[in-house]
Length: 347
Image 1 (cartoon, helix red, strand yellow):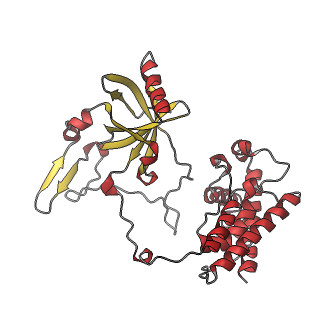
Image 2: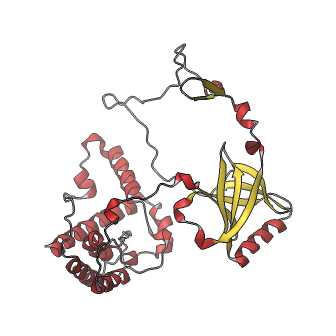
């Protein structure tokens, strides 16, 4: 990783030199635009309206227009701002961690010690751990003042930038003004449905299905060209219609719970139909329960009983193209089975 910023955490008179690294990265397949007629690459040119010439980046400034006047701001102007020149990550307060609304969280960054001795860094880390607090900090990065939460993750200090209060929209929905009456029986049945989905969250067990299928499609087109048969590549896909509104909520909950129990029982007894965290069974149950109880269905990839544990999935996925194709095909089959179960349940 390459550091994107250097500075120091300031905590009273304590100074902790650090380097800042992006903690996340994009895994999407890189695509660009082309002309559908001849495949020519579509490029965007920075053309000046006055002389019609293409302008290189080094000669581009920014401007503000209030409707009557225009103010041009150069890179030197931005660099002269006091906040931009500051290299401090200032701790402004320590707050209970539960008070930070996840809706405010934006981007994440790792902080690495940037001095010969990491004692001050370890002191800050231990302080956060033992007080069970999150530090609220302010700093300037890329021409913006940032508000961030600083916490500990695996012995590393992490900055998570926060949205400003006026950047979060108010959720004002008139449809929620009328309070719906929910019975105790419906709550109890919904709780049973939740119990059938209970598990410990393991991010490594989940995969971006769309990107996996996109890579499979690209590989198939490289081999077969425009003569590609998508039905042969992905299997026949049933048409999806809009889900009908659930009239009898209690009945939908009963069917969802029964379907979940039945699917999990049959899945555990079969030789090759089990899934990580009961993925296909839960998806089959949630297809009717999703529209009725609002519970989340988590689809995890299918896994044969003889396959490696979930913790080794990441390395096995990238080992060969054949495994990726097999996994996607198996997922498609599981999804088709789930939809069939849903239709039977709703009937």
